[in-house]
Length: 396
Image (cartoon, rainbow, N blue to C red; front, side):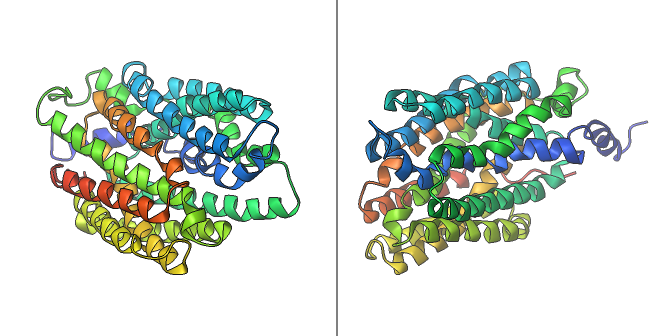
C-alpha cells in the first residue's frame, strides 16, 4: 500500500550505483580538475608564446577558441545526453578530448594549436557538465548542495595546486608541455578507469522505464521558455565574470601567481561556507544576493587604479559573491528542469554562456576598468533574471 514514505523508499532504491566512493571520485575528477584546460594556460601562456611562430596573441586566441568549442559542444553534444544517456557519451567525449590535448602539446603550428584548443572545448569540457548531471541524478536531492560545495572546494584546491606548482615549474624551467601533462593526469586516470566502475544515471533509467512520476516535460511549454532565458542570462554572467577575473589577473594586481593563488584560496573558503548560506536562503535568493553583491563591488573597483592592491582586494571580495552564484547555477539546473530535458536546458544555457566567456580572454588585453564594467553589467542583468526563477523545490 502506498504511504507518504513510499517516494523516499523508491528514491533510495534507485540511488546507489555511482554514490559509491570510487565511481564518485572518478566522476568528480572530471569537474574538479577541469582547471587543467580552463585556467592553467594563464601560467603556461608565456612559455607557449615563446614557441617558434607563436605569440601572446596566439595564446589569447587559443583561449578564445577553447570557449568557442565549448559553445559548440553545448549546442550540439549536451542535448545528446538526454537522448542516448549520460555515461557512455561522457567517456566517449572525454577520450576524443584527450586526443585533442595530446595533439595540442605536440603542435608546432599555431593554427594546429588553435584547432586543438577548439577540440578540447568541444569534447573535453562537456565531460565536467555531464559529470554533474550524472552525479546529481545518482545521489539524494538533499545532498546536492553539499556535493556541489565539495566539488567547488576541490576545484579551488586544484587551482591552488596549479598556481603554486606552476611557480615551482617556472623556477626549474620545466617545459609547458610537461607542465600541462601533469595537470591533465587526474583526468586521464578518471577516463581510463571510469568506464569499468561508473554506471548510468538511475534517475534517467527510472524515467525511461516509466517508474518515475511524469509531468509536462517540454521546454517549449510556458513557463519553461522563461526559465531557460533566465538561466541563459545567469550562466552567461557567472561564467564570463568568473573567467574574466582569472584571465585579467595580470592587470588586476602586480603579481600573477599571488593573485591567482589568492583567488583560488578565496574560492575554497567561500565554497565551503556557501553551503549553509544556500541552505538558509534557498539557491534562488542566494544566487540573487551573490550576483548583486558582485555587481556593486566591481562597480567600486572600476574607479580604482589598475594593478593596485586596492583593486585586487575589491575584486577578491567580488569573486566571493560570484562564487556563491557559481554553486547555485548548477543547483538550479537540477531543481528547475525535469530529467528528460535537463541536459538540453544546460546545453542551451551554456551555448550562450560560453560564447560570452570567449570574451573573457580578450578582457585580459583591455584596461582594468573596462573589464570591471563588463562584469558589472553582466552580473546586474543576471540578478534581475534570477528574480524570475521559481523558488527552491522541496527536498525529500
